[in-house]
Image (cartoon, rainbow, N blue to C red):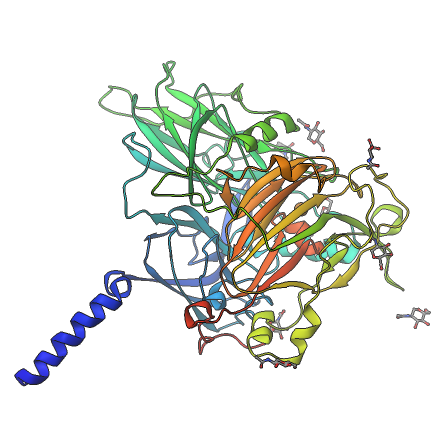
Amino acid sequence: MGSFYHQIFVTLVLLLSIFLPCSLSSTTRRFEFNVKWKNVKRLCNTRPVLTVNGEYPGPTISVHEGDNVEVKVTNRVDMNTTLHWHGIRQLRTGWADGPAYVTQCPIGTGKSYTYRFTVVNQRGTLWWHAHLSWQRSTVNGAFIIYPRMPYPFSVPIQEEIPITFGEWFNSDVMAIEKDMMLTGVGPNASDAYTINGLPGPLYNCSLKDTFIKTVEHGKTYLLRIINAALNDELFFAVADHTLTVVEIDAVYTKPFTTKAIMIAPGQTTNVLLTANQKPDSTGMFVLAARPYLTSIFPFDNSTTIGFLKYKTTKSKETVELPLPPYTLPSNLPALQDTEFATEFANKLRSLGSPQYPCKVPKKVHKQVITTIGLNLQDCPPNKTCKGFRNQRFLASMNNQSFIRPPISILECHYKNLSMANLFSNFPEKPPVPFNYTGVNSLTENMNAEFGSKLVVVPYGTRLEIVLQDTNFLNPENHPIHVHGHNFFIVGCGFGNFDAEKDPLHYNLVDPPERNTVAVPIGGWAAIRIHADNPGVWFIHCHLEEHTTWGLAMGLVVQEGKNPSQCLIPPPDDLPPC
Ligand SMILES: *[C@@H]1O[C@H](CO)[C@@H](O)[C@H](O)[C@H]1NC(C)=O
Ligand SMILES: *[C@@H]1O[C@H](CO)[C@@H](O)[C@H](O)[C@H]1NC(C)=O
Ligand SMILES: *[C@@H]1O[C@H](CO)[C@@H](O)[C@H](O)[C@H]1NC(C)=O
Ligand SMILES: *[C@@H]1O[C@H](CO)[C@@H](O)[C@H](O)[C@H]1NC(C)=O
Ligand SMILES: *[C@@H]1O[C@H](CO)[C@@H](O)[C@H](O)[C@H]1NC(C)=O
Ligand SMILES: *[C@@H]1O[C@H](CO)[C@@H](O)[C@H](O)[C@H]1NC(C)=O
Ligand SMILES: *[C@@H]1O[C@H](CO)[C@@H](O)[C@H](O)[C@H]1NC(C)=O
Ligand SMILES: *[C@@H]1O[C@H](CO)[C@@H](O)[C@H](O)[C@H]1NC(C)=O
Ligand SMILES: [Cu+2]
């Protein structure tokens, strides 16, 4: 290279490095995910399960804050699929978010799609999962974002312990979903809960499938806890140990110590555990998870356990299961302990430090009030329904039971196709006000309407959504997940939301920031969103049965004026419908 051109080249590189510090300093992390069947045996029952790369549970993705991520997903099964990076903001990259028929058409058999996105200003534990049908039952894994700065808690961490809860079904999960929609009844419950895919010794044939983690006395561990169960909120506790919550949904919290946690499907919780107890001769402490039950439907009410094993001074360490019976931790809340669930939720607070300020919108431009709840729908003509009163179960938001259209809503919106008009105008208030949580649970008319309606807001809108549970059939705690944005839970309570009084008690200082809120049973939660991410974003209950029944809606955030407030163009390999 001649010296003149060399000079220009150096100048260009210098200029680039000034204007593009991030893109030059960040790394691109690439992953290959093959969706394929794999035979897995649990509870003496072998069945083919859908996996990524033949792994059950699925592989962990570990990246650093600021990294670019590329996951090439290849579909090697006889059904459509998509993957979702749960909790990742997907700033301007809505094409990579994943919910089928919302941000993309599915990846067909034999086809590939590369999800490309950057992890911006997030750190902690998230996860990834399939987002079509009930595939996420086994197609899921941890998504860990390591911080660039030291943790805000000063305790040295000896080791990280990933703990993902799941549900094991002895029969085909997709058939359960199909069956449920065909008959109109509630779905079959799972046969076991699992810790990292292991049910533990309280289930048949499962002694060898038990989670055991060796720890050292006096050391502190960071537990990265994910609830990947399909339909169940869970309590979790470790016998004789307390847990210190430090992060939820990849956002730091003000640390607090608790005897147990409640974690809803979709949520993640990082806790510190110090091995500071006096072990007995076995050196084992039971850790356990069982559901927080708020439903009348048949539920899996079983318990999964594993063990913390304190290291001894013996030179040869053997890790053997203690003999039964196994005593559950006395600090594990009972199945219907709403009091504990409420107390726990109320202790969650954003860290709100100078380095990690709590950016809760203090004022809002728009408020949407929506019911969330179940429905009992008249049977379609010439069909047989086996739900209550020979009707069928459904679910809705503001009486709209969401149907996914056979197209990508995001694509329609981006290309301004005429169909996009069909999707707007989600009702911003309940169409018929009633005593939401006081009405008879077996009201005569509990029908919903079918639709694919969306709330549309301009870029930058500060939006409040009040989620109001209803009594139809039964009140229930619903974990509502918002794609593409975190939100702040500024208030929640039991009974009906009071638009006059309740906002007076909002926490606008350090409310918890997360991507999934467990709305109190027979109550409400108010969340605030800074809608700064253009695109189409799915909002839905993370109990899979409820999403299938239609407890969902969409939020459209329009593009802003400058290019950094616009979606990037759709990638070339975006699957067609
Ligand atoms: C659901 O459970 C019922 C009763 O145990 C059983 O007959 C049926 O086959 C199950 N359905 C599926 C899809 O596994
Ligand atoms: C567990 O195994 C026993 C004995 O084999 C059997 O009687 C029982 O039905 C099994 N329980 C379940 C839940 O499969
Ligand atoms: C769990 O459910 C079974 C059957 O549905 C019931 O017999 C049992 O009592 C329940 N267990 C608890 C602890 O509620
Ligand atoms: C329902 O059945 C009746 C008589 O069997 C038939 O006339 C009618 O066309 C059917 N309706 C639908 C929607 O299939
Ligand atoms: C989108 O389409 C509508 C009507 O079909 C039209 O009024 C509007 O100008 C279009 N917007 C853009 C950005 O093309
Ligand atoms: C709603 O119903 C509950 C229970 O019946 C009752 O206590 C409450 O007063 C009702 N609220 C209103 C606004 O009618
Ligand atoms: C919901 O919509 C159905 C069908 O239009 C209607 O019959 C019902 O009264 C509505 N219910 C509520 C609570 O809005
Ligand atoms: C897979 O997705 C395509 C595109 O939406 C659709 O046409 C096809 O029917 C789907 N296949 C199955 C088996 O659902
Ligand atoms: Cu729900």
